[in-house]
Length: 438
Image 1 (cartoon, one colour):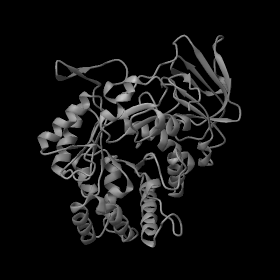
Image 2 (spheres, helix red, strand yellow; image 1 turned 90 degrees about the vertical axis):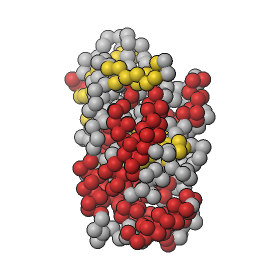
Image 3 (cartoon, helix red, strand yellow; image 1 turned 30 degrees about the vertical axis):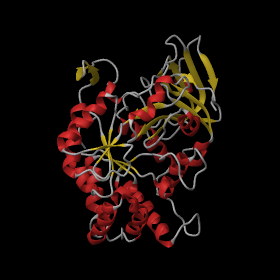
Image 4 (spheres, one colour; image 1 turned 60 degrees about the horizontal axis):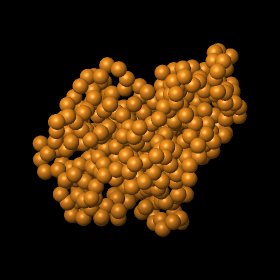
């Protein structure tokens, strides 16, 4: 993996029309900050959550009868109730019978023009941070006028693609390696905390974008199909969006070549040809499988499968034998990634065919369990591993002293039954309880 999260802290600022980079020895680096301002709780205020079942995000078993002490917007204690020192003036909340988790992260969420989706789809469901990979900044101009409480918003800016772009209104059409580097610089100057590349960008331009992103200390994530995943990882990408991005790297080379030719001539053809390609992938005796899994593991590449948007089951919702078999192979490949130790994260892609409105994230975690992850492993993927993908693991993603108090209370036992993540009863953002919002 490129050393994007081990860089010295930098602050990207725009001054006199130029991108200026300054060292910052105090606090988290601005390069990984959210686009919106989260109002922190007053430093003088202490909140104590008692008798909770603590799932701290680190992957260990829950701590029964636990206590978490929050001072201002920071966690100052997390552990056994018997070991806690509770300030005399603290506001106490009894969480008996509830599980306490870090706020969830959504690695792949698209919103535009208003706070409605971030509130209804994300914050009300315990998602306190999300990344929109690839939508232009103009889709989030409303942030400056917003007065509602929404999750932490991390943006990539318009995705980098090549002629003819699949989404012309959302893409920066790259013409050269120098252009790719300049686009990265411009995105970072506007606040991008990651860069998204799209399926037509040639490998040499991917490499130039990754080199530029390295200079700023931010990750590059990729939606691939025409560019093979192994080549993109070699070029420096840190994350892969969508399990379908691995199709041409796994498929028989002749079939991959046909797919590339057809989809190369018509981006919309991928909707038909993607399941065709995946339905013919043989995973169990595939000479390309282990080298790809080894590469993902050794490079530390993050994988956001977004399985829910590709779900197809025999006899249900317009499924065919081709789409059902294709999805079965996608599910199995995700399982093999997990078994191999690949870093899997949770992304909803906003909506999914087998999910109620606003519940695509829940469907995604259910499918990850179906793909062989335990509910506790899925929670870790949704919190700690995702925070690493966002580059904010120094301040978010787990419940431990020094971290920001983005917390959720869940009725039930989500480490045993992942569907219990649908029972979020309270959300804390920056040390403040969030009132339910319509």
